[in-house]
View 1 (cartoon, protein in one colour):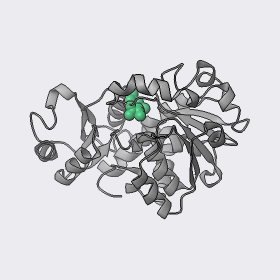
View 2 (tube, protein in one colour):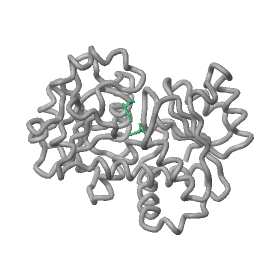
View 3 (cartoon, rainbow, N blue to C red):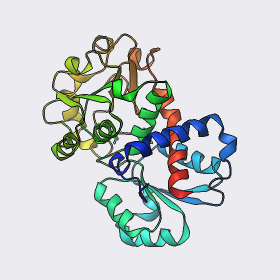
View 4 (tube, rainbow, N blue to C red):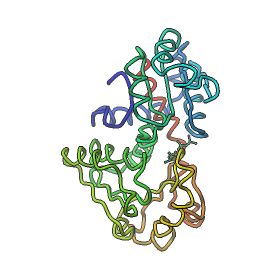
Length: 300
Ligand code: CP
Ligand code: NVA
């Protein structure tokens, strides 16, 4: 594997399925892996809030025999108190891996170029690879053949959508994306992905995207860092709410998926997220197992 995990694009198809197999084994036999990262330290840099990512990385490294150091925005003031390059060079002298949640993808790239240790993207404005690995692992562990699976993503063409695009390229599922006009995923990412023969279609009408899908996925309409756009977005996105009516266009046994946190009553109704078709907590749980697999591969 490459030194870093900055985007799903960094992984080959084989590496992704190998990670799934390892995560499955780690999930079934956690005791067999208690020492694999014994004494290793993960620096966990957060420039945005988090529940799942922080708890699963910190719990994960601990369960593998190492420890995580949580660095809040006010601790290191990345790029203000000290440059990204200098932070990367310093951390490389002490710890064994860096996990970073930040804004621009460029910050991650700078970190990766200047660190001699693995750098893991724990969400940027552009991508959220660990989330998409957990999501695809959740589908895969239920026995689905991803090459025969259709996932409909409804909502904002954001970091989750961008990571699904690379996920579709690497694992072969069919991706249907419905967004309002002006909120599509980035054209560069779509263009690059399409060159690799991925089956990705864009829609304005969410019903068309959802029709016959095996899973319907949504995310918040306003991502972290876009708070000042919230009012404007609240006016544009309501037709994209995943409610029982929209969900009924998917296959009868379709899953409802969400990376969480959810804004109940906005992008999804309680009825859908609390239904028996919702697998959002399995996705959240699997963040732990897949990231343990990623850490073992990169830091082991
Ligand atoms: N899904 C996810 O990354 O959750 P947090 O923002 O709580 O880490
Ligand atoms: N798109 C969301 C994902 C949160 C896990 C955000 O970036 O805020």
